[in-house]
Image 1 (cartoon, rainbow, N blue to C red):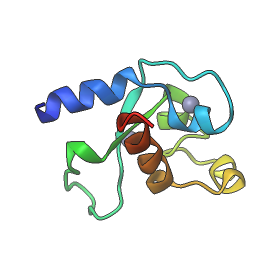
Image 2 (image 1 turned 135 degrees about the vertical axis):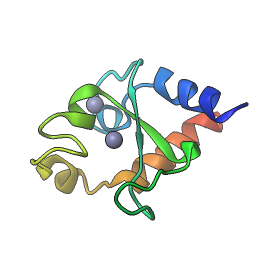
Image 3 (image 1 turned 180 degrees about the horizontal axis):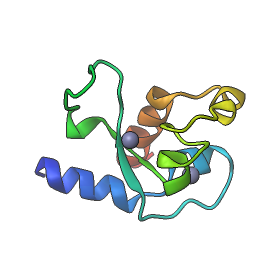
Image 4 (image 1 turned 60 degrees about the vertical axis):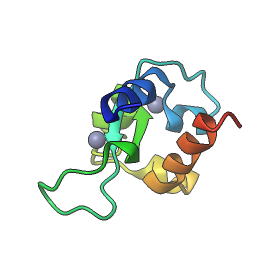
Length: 92
Ligand SMILES: [Zn+2]
Ligand SMILES: [Zn+2]
C-alpha cells in the first residue's frame, strides 16, 4: 500500500470524533494529519492521519477550530483518535 492509498483508505472511514460521540460515522471524511511532533510548516507522515468530518476537522468545534470544549469534555486529543483509527484498521 502506498502512502496515497493509505490516506485514501483513512478518508473512506467515518469521523473518529463522531464515533466517540456515539453518532453514526460514515465516510468520506477529511484526513487530518496529527500535529504532534511536527513544527509549523513541517509535513507529517501520511500514516499519522485520522478521519474527521468537515465540522470536527475545520469547523468551529473541530481540531483546528476555536471552540475545543467538546474535545475537553470527551477527554480526547488527536493521539486518542489516532489509536482508534489504528484499532479499526487492525480489524478490531
Ligand atoms: Zn465528526
Ligand atoms: Zn487537519
